[in-house]
Length: 125
Image 1 (cartoon, helix red, strand yellow):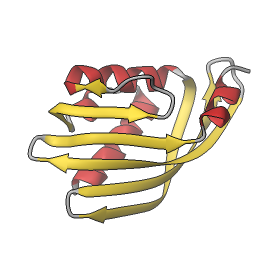
Image 2: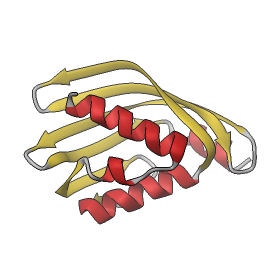
Image 3: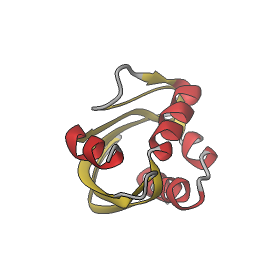
């Protein structure tokens, strides 16, 4: 299974089973994670753990669907749509792209791009 497939599988486990550790283990010890709603970078496995815990807390139920997965050497771009319900029961749907860079120790850099207004509007209603 490719590193990208492992990421998609582990994200699915986080979303469906709230099983965080398989996803965290894919990240390098010196990784950096960011998205358009996070004020500062998250670093290392502890940063990855916090990043994904915070992400999962936004939703009661959530599922990512991947439209395009593009892999070129040590880089991947994943185009996705997320569907689910917010903690207050409201419907959530937003789309974006995640870019990953891989190193010897796992995912070295993760960045997610999406329109933050769509996520914020739906998770605060």
